[in-house]
Amino acid sequence: MKRIALYPGTFDPVTNGHIDIIYRASSLCDTLIIGVAENIGKNPFFTVSERKALIEDAIKNNSKSSNRTLGEIIVKSFDNLLIDFARTNSVTMIIRGLRAVSDFDYEFQMAGMNARLASDIETVFLTASESNQFVASRFVKEIALLGGDISSFVPSNVAVAIENKKNI
Image 1: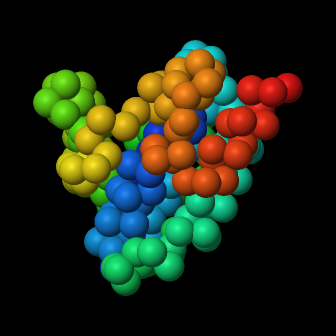
Image 2 (image 1 turned 90 degrees about the vertical axis):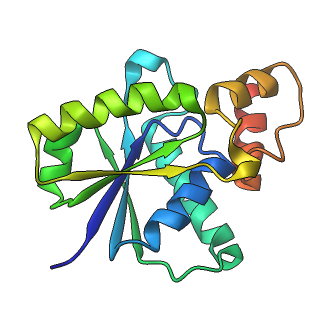
């Protein structure tokens, strides 16, 4: 049986922390689907298609830096219930990243709800690497919009895209 994992999120923008989780999760499965949530309620900085392209470029440009054997990585968008998206893609595990204790409470509740909806799909938590424990997309956007240097928080293609978008 093929192990298909799903790493869902808004990824607005994708950060080095996300990329780290993507590579680590990809080494645990045959196929990793990165599920980009449309989530218009969060008033995203980038469109879904822009976020998908940024993730694909970041993976392509940074995969050589990973010392892990990676499975297949696919980027897809979704706008429905996470469990429905997971079932449609034959997912066996949902990957969630944890940065701090504050993430755990929310993620623990979400994992419980998902388990009630689909007991055959496991939730796997990966803790953030030490260098990425404080990196959050919302902080990256705020720093960038206030003129700060975000180059150590995001892949280079994302830093360029943010700079270009904020100058429009």
